[in-house]
Image 1 (cartoon, rainbow, N blue to C red):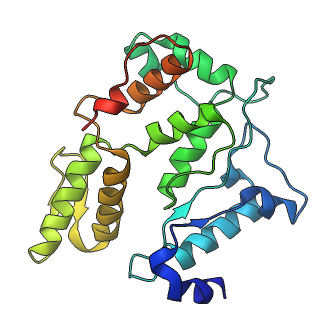
Image 2: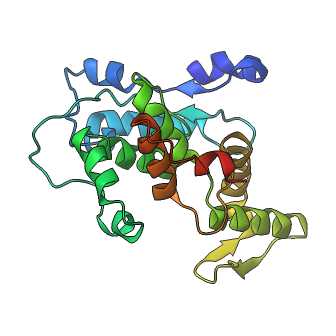
Length: 223
């Protein structure tokens, strides 16, 4: 019914926003800070249904934004942190990882990755420190961009399958076309990372900016 209501106004609807807190409220549920919305089964089922109705790439869909992450202060943990040490240690910035963990922002990072994997783009924000993290996780990697360009070019020339330019996956023009188009739209909005730059680099710039360290902003130079 909502889809039918919105369809005539597609040109003025920026996105369909999922109210995860409101969905949980209907059942008296609230996700703890150490779990993502996808761990709350009844709410996750509704999120999947919303994506299935509103996220189609056949011209009937809309951009869909992820549910709000409602936590922004430190608390004691029961489960292991959700950020691996290795990527931060490689850049010699274990302290940045610790700052993200202290503020319970590793849960936000995890949920954003799952949002993107499930077809959601962007997120409702309730605290300024979340903005840079959402942007960092929304930047298109150099490899993703190369795949999207190859897929759309292959589709335009008649379709088919080929190995990715990175040599680590299959790019199939037909099934991956919608992903390619969505990735190019995200690239227009959030930029494309230079080869060698990744999520950790952007998280580093964000955390240092919050701390006033003036370390520069690779996210502003990613094109």
